[in-house]
Length: 355
Image 1 (spheres, rainbow, N blue to C red):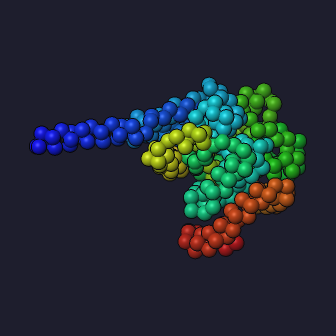
Image 2: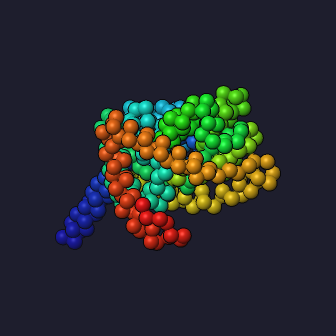
Image 3: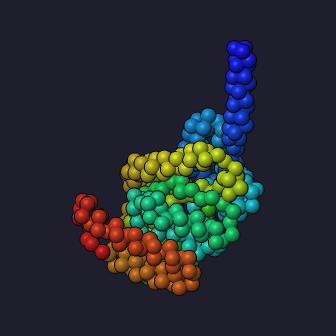
């Protein structure tokens, strides 16, 4: 009797082990082309941060194989490639899809918009992520979107000549991103959206007269200071910039709940790290630009900032009038920010003026 009991127990243990092995999540390989080179701090370094940590945290069950821009898929083709299943995932920013979905730039950067902490609050504790996924679903894209990086303010641009008034902007050829580009277009600038790797050659050859791209430490890597000696602040068009990890939805649905959570946790961790990294490394680049590279740091006058803001409000109204989802997202973000103003106007130093 004892032997039969032990034998039955042994068979049960083996059966549970087999079932457990069968139920164990399959290993996931996500080939992940990126829109920003991994040498760029806060941009490319963020997805490499995710890749390095998710492999360890998952004991090798999840591997994000990162491909530099244009090595597997061109930056502007990432969304379609992920949606069709050509690749498992892609790292980019939603502002690149403005031509496909007008609301997309609102999930990337908003002129005179929220700083990093407020933006993250809207994404994660407001309706931001819900509306973000809704945009892709309504657009017919078979993707799961994860917020996977936020960085601090950008510079307002690099110019070959000093900009003293709005008249100096007219006829300027400039690389400009997102909704800020629409503002500049209304002010007479000929706007061109180029991927990061194409900007310096265009600036060097005179195809463009000016450019904005990112924070000083990132712009430094691209060498803009060698050609354009006027660096303007503040980055009114991008007080914070958000980045996305797009995962093919079929692939996402095949992942276990634990794998999905690990990926979400890794992106949340990377977002916090991107903010910290970005804030830590800017001042050295600014000092070098002034002391060693003859760059002039310029701050827009109150009149110019007022003009940019007024023009942005016109652009926002026009975009909301043309696209229902843009209107829905912008109104939701605006409502969230009005609530946040009560907190911001009382909590921070120096005290901000209530809106």
